[in-house]
Structures are given as structure tokens and as C-alpha cells.
Amino acid sequence: MIITLIDIALLTFMGATAIAILRLRSLFAVVMLSGIYSLLAASMFVVLDAVDVAFTEAAVGAGISTVLMIAVLALTGERERTPSHTPLLPMVVVVLTGAALIYATFDMPAFGDANAPVNLHVAPRYLNESFAEVGLPNVVTSVLASYRGYDTLGEVTVIFTAAVAVMLLIGGRKGDDAGIKKEPADDTEPDDDGGTA
Amino acid sequence: MRHHRVLRIISKLLIPFIMLFALYVQFHGDFGPGGGFQAGVIFGSAFILYGLIFGLEYARMVAPPAIVTRLVAAGVLIFAGTGYAGLFAGGNFLDYGVLKSDPVAGQHLGILLVEFGVGTTVAASMITIFFLFAGRDR
Image (cartoon, rainbow over all chains, first blue to last red; front, side, top):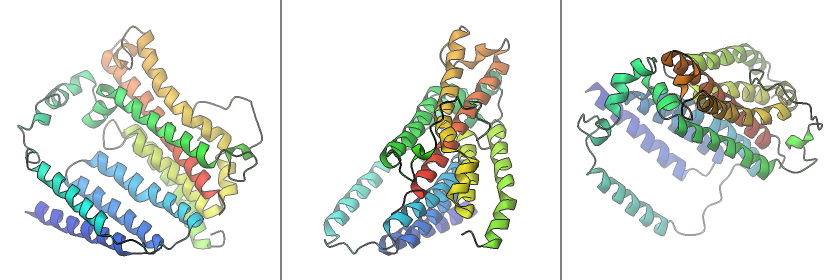
């Protein structure tokens, strides 16, 4: 009962935040509201008992993205222009897509259903045997780092690629004040133990 | 922001604890919520806070971009290297059980190294991206 009330309150706040983001033209306020939206999403993940996901959402969504967006605002300006076209066509597309997605959820098993396919495949084995095989109390870490280590390697490569892409796109020019190349060329091998960062 | 005395002093007080909390999240991720991704973001945010309050030039002195960009790649290499270590020790790629004579101890070692690689790449990427965006003039 309490959980249901918390769910309703969080969803109401999220809906209100989303509508405010749509209607506001001040981009600074939009960035702040996006941070609040991420924090609400993190609270929702806590209610769903997904604390690891909530942690990531709070740190990345509410923390770093907000700072990065503010850094971008300093470059672009703070007001969004009023669009010249009518929002009718995008509205129809969004409503149709949303309706299709909601229609698809009718086929999904109920949340937390013990007989849902996802809870019958590998999940029981992870939950029953990961402590004997890996020996960690936090099964999420066992799955992420050990059972699904290959996927996590891919995720780290994605972050690496993102950083490289940003460097190439906006940091690549020689003599650019912002660029990495501003540093005097120093070919001595840096200390690669990683602990000094 | 350099003239806001309250912000400067409070952030000076906070930054060591932010870093300590990041290390806790990094190395306690085996037992509670957390892990390399979250720890890396928190560790990076300590440097970003420093850069916001004290200015980008000082932040670049604390975390020289030449080293930080290399750390972005070093984390991936630590992760993949742990995988190859398992391969050369006679197991499969990313099979940590063979890293030590006891499979569970090997798993612990492997997960520790892998999470450290994740944290290094994530923290260094966040700092790099912040430096590039914040250092660009209009």
C-alpha cells in the first residue's frame, strides 16, 4: 500500500517535471529539471529494489550529465527559440509510438512474477550458486564482472569510444586552448598504475 | 567562481571525502551496491567540482590531460589484460577462476582488477569530457 502511494507520487512528479521541461524555453531551467527527473528516476529504482541501477542513475543522470549540460550551455546560450512549425505532426508520431509501446506491455508478465521467463532462465542459477562459485554477497557484481564479464568489457569500450570521439570532435585542433595538445609534448611513459588519477 | 569564499572552503572540505567515498564504492562493490562505474563517476566528479570552483587551469595542473587521456585507455587495457591473463593461465578469456589455485580466490582477484579497470576508464573519461567542454570558448 505504502509502496503504491510512493509509486504514484514519484510518477506524478516525473510527469510534472517532463511537462515543465517541454514547456520551458529557459534551457538552464530545463537542465536543472532534467537533473531532478533523473533523481526521481533513481528513487523509482530504489523502490524497485534495484539499488545498483539507482546509484548509477543518481551519479550519472543527476550528477555528471547536469554539469556537462551546464558546460554546454555556457557555449550555446540559455534560451531556446520558439519553434516555427506546429507541433501537431510530432505530437501524432509520439502519441502513436507511446500507444504501441503501452499496447506491447499487455503481453508482458506482471512485475516480479516468479514464473516470468526472465526469472526461469539463468536467474535461479545465479542466485543459488553464485556464492559458491564466485563468493560475493552482491550477486549484481558477480553477474556484471564475472558471468557477464564480456558484456561489461564491451560497455567499458563504449565509454572509451565516447571519450575518444569527444576528443576527436572538439579537442583535436593543434594550438587550441581547450585541446589536449596544449600540453607540451612529453613522450616519457606516464605512470600507468592508474592510482594517481 | 573564484571569489566565492564559502564555495571554495566547503568544496575544499568536501573533495577528500568525495574521493574517499568513491574508493569505498569501488572496493566495497563486492559486498554492497556500487562498483567501478559508480565509483569512477564519483571520483571524476571530485575533479570536476575542483575545476568548477578553482578554475580549469588549476584542475589541469592537478589532473594533467596528457596523463588523464592515457588513463582512459589504461582502464580498458587492465580489463582486457585480466581477460588475457585467464587465457594464458589455461582457462577461457575472462575466466578468473584459473588466476589462483583456489577458483573462488581467483574470482575475487579477477573481479577486483576488472572493476579497477572500469573505474579508471570511467573516471578518466568523465574528467576528459568535462575538460574539453568547459575549456572551449564560445
